[in-house]
Figure 1 (spheres, one colour):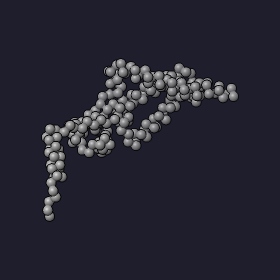
Figure 2: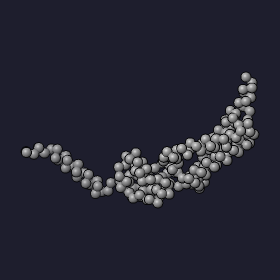
Figure 3: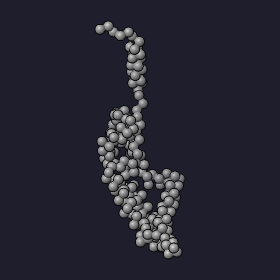
Figure 4: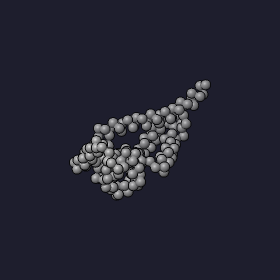
Length: 188
């Protein structure tokens, strides 16, 4: 029984190497996601999903090295939690750093008009944009003031407020329908 605990708790690589491996892989993944876009975070198509699954499996060995011990796995996980917490706290206090890591939101639709260059820059097809609009209950992009690809990868839709003329027309139609309901049926 003592041999099992020794195998579980004895690191296969030095602790400093384990920490360094984890920090380097974490930094590489932050840079990779920043360079390759926000799309990977929120608007996954099947190809993006496969890449993320394979990346996680690929970098696993880079983090653990020749170490299959429980202690090594727990140390790697602890380092990930700690470095993530430190970077989140730092980025909260330093907006310039946060923008450098996260980027800025991109406007994809402005005043109902699709900005094709923004879609192309983010590798989002018109069909994907329209599907996201339907998920948000938006039938026509002409009803949208703007659509932004947020730094999280989510699409935010801001629906246009009806104009005074639209509001007036809707109210007139509502009142006409009320009057028609009160009128006796027309003789045939």
